[in-house]
Length: 258
Ligand SMILES: [Zn+2]
Image 1: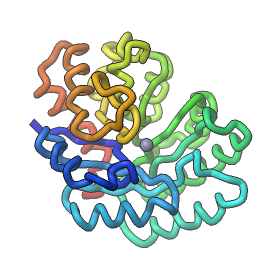
Image 2: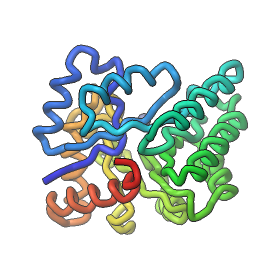
Image 3: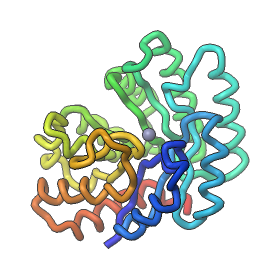
Image 4: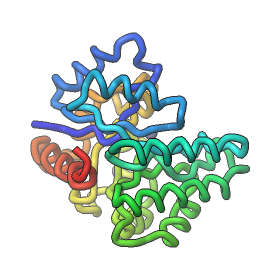
């Protein structure tokens, strides 16, 4: 059985003390590949260092995270993303999107950066990884403008309604399902069965959003199994089937780049 963690920040400082053990535990649990979303220029070095040590397991994305979009620095940050995208291959443009939980004042600037990076992804026929927090309308507004057969990717940490899930899928997005699925008040467990598993990929978003029974603690990629098990229970299929399907789905998104 093999799993893919389609969204994990293993290069984060939260793993400074025990990064190798964390990766070892994940590999032992069957989580064999890791897709690492970028945040901003401050995380680039740590991502490269991790990739150097695990070249076959780590797959890097490049992008500017919406919470790092600041009026004084976004131009330099976007130039950094563009420069890196020109220099080498990445598996996706991400994570990008809109986050109105932390800061509403930069909403239109966040949308502008999201749009620009989507256009770069489309030119290069790369998938995008969307971060959306308290901002479904704002994210869908941009996706509606940019929809195209070259627009595809993953709606990471999906926490919306059934209607929003269907709309995300209509833009060629898979739904990234993580720890929230195991939360009592997470809501998505109520309707996810109505979405075909063909549209679902697994993720931890570690070090954030630990699944039950680790909720509130540091998350790590080996905990992906708890999310997979919950999905198996909901769909009433075997854990093996969940592994097979979600791995296939993730690889179909990331296929062009190693
Ligand atoms: Zn993330």
